[in-house]
Amino acid sequence: MNRTTLTLDEDTRRRLRRIAAERGISMAALIREAIDETVERHAPKPRSLGIGASGSRDTGRLAGEVRPEPRPWR
Image (cartoon, rainbow, N blue to C red):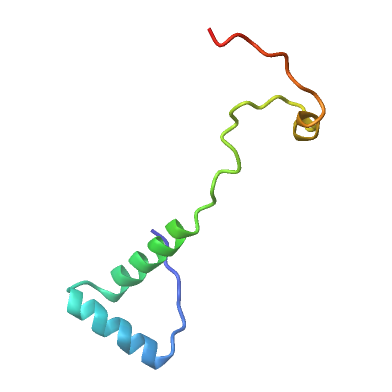
């Protein structure tokens, strides 16, 4: 783990200390928990699963112009 320094106003520090005491954990553990939750919530969503990647960038435009040959369903 790495250390870091936070600058908090007195009211926020007091509230954090009270919440930590109520839960029976340290302020550091409470702050780490809050940071972990925030980081997890803002984790980047995958842009694409890569399914059906054709390598062609104009597939969407061509979809309206080119009609595929019907295939038998069996």
